[in-house]
Image (cartoon, rainbow, N blue to C red):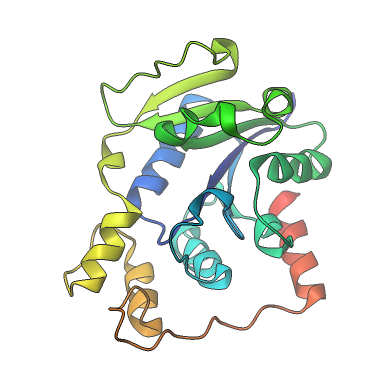
Length: 220
């Protein structure tokens, strides 16, 4: 039986419990062997706002997923130069896991825009797409191939990264919205502070050999 691999793509700025619950629900529903979280490097669709450095987002994702043995984190998008496109992510994962059945997990709001994504026709051949959404949401676009898309209701999707960033900026707590370790990481590195604060430097990028090792450990 071929490996069933979930791919949870996202900016994760920061990762929160909605992401984790969504990945867990999809893992259970589709009997996935693993869910690989893939933080974006330079997300092409978020050019209208500043995004935290990739290393911060990668490390927060590692912290958030460490306790679940079925959750892994990949650096494929963080280490790739240029803008991040889902087609490149899936091509790399397919190359690393040629026999695996891929399930790409994303928000239903993002999935509703999938016809504008790069090389969309090839996307359908690489993975089954699972849109996680709040209860009651429906995809209205009739141009989507229903045999390649599923919806998964997740009540915790009411949590959003946008709200978490705003709460931190306003000095409000994000405990229980994001994992405890991520709260501590945000505080330590002063992420999402007000505009008058000095932005912290990104943590050092691992050496090339370390990156290769981390990628291999994730994808095998």
